[in-house]
Length: 279
Image (tube, rainbow, N blue to C red; front, side):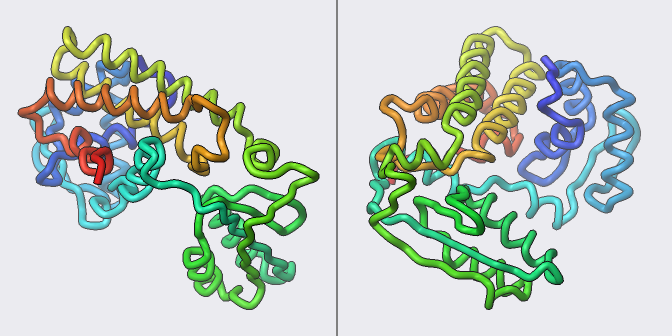
């Protein structure tokens, strides 16, 4: 099942239980289901302990790993991000028609600040319109200004909003199709849909370790599909967008896995419960 998508470090962090501990025996069993060797897991544990991310009591498969406070805080999913994507899919977050634009021109002498701004824009789903000008369909001004202040580049950031964005004669959904690589994003969502279908098919007959491996794989694929996804509102996407269908399949797979592992205290099985629920 291992396909390079899941790193050993990511697997270890995914195996965190509600009490912030990891059962090493369960970890090794899931690693085996994912095609990872014991030595690979041992080395990853050793590195994480050396970095101060976990402590270990005991040895081998009887050991218990405990996450440090910093580790716990750093591996929680962005629940608001997940909530937004499912709210959009349900038609509960209609687009207001406003485009949010940001531009910056940071001197070469302050290229670290320039890089910080560019990274923040990309992380928030911004697309380059033309030199130094980026667009988003979501409000991002507060996050960008905070990044600019932290980088000491607040005076170089310009933000504005408009309901009249014309990109080479294209507007609305046509403009979005020119700004964002929708074909590549769709490919990522197809992989997610395939992974979710596999999880749904295999869950009933899978062992405990196999179900946890399916959960880890599903979340990893979900993350890979959505990290580059700007979460464009449905009004700016092609009809019957694969992203919405893939997320629906993922939600059903999570529900099936969580129901089959009702007695498990693995946090990963519960992380997305609240964001998936309508409000």
